[in-house]
Image (cartoon, rainbow, N blue to C red; front, side):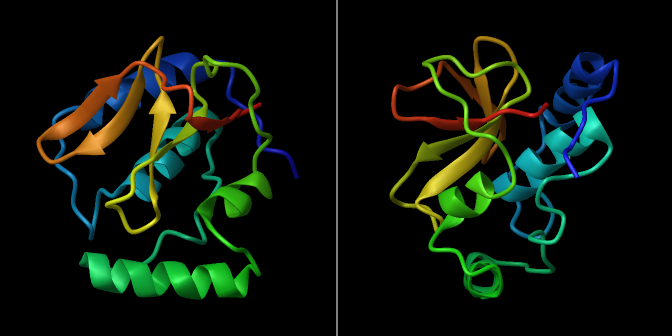
Length: 144
């Protein structure tokens, strides 16, 4: 069924972001998929990709896990996989709480995943969350 936000989703989202603001990126516990999934879980009580979050400890094992998941779900890439789970947002500024994918060639997915927290997008970084304005090439999905 459809994922539905809790009545206090905005407070839950801000509490979640505040709690992980200083948390460093870590393949085994805090990668971009976990961050985006947990941000949705904070808003709704369940993640959009709980079945995709795996037990991996490095980029290589995460990549193998990702390829297995794509094959299992018969998907070409992370974007089409999310398209099958969440409604795509049109427009330049995603709504607060939306999952965001930003093109990033050097990453395993080709994208980094984050969440819209205000007029800024939040993404996991080496020393904690990185906040940035939306880019015209960002892809976003709404949480209803």
